[in-house]
Length: 84
Image (tube, rainbow, N blue to C red; front, side, top):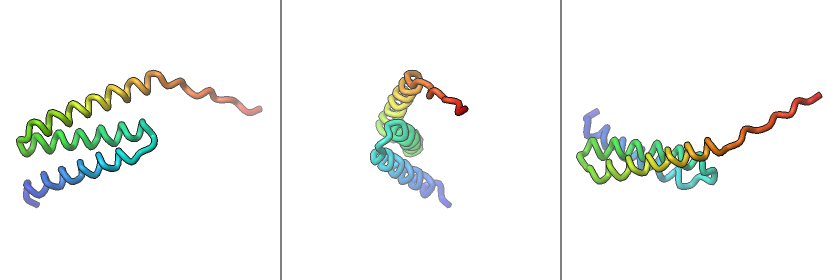
């Protein structure tokens, strides 16, 4: 495949990932899928020299990571009850 086609496919995959992330009810899954989609979009923007696309999506990916770290740090571990 030509490199142009691979770059185009990268853009489509990124679009699908972001769209799927916005359909999630679970905020953690939404953040993870959106992070992956934004990361792919940042790579796509870099590949086509579209710096606003790359920069904005890298920024949003960073926001997703910030919120994921915050969520995981505040989550309390489940108490496991041993059955007798």
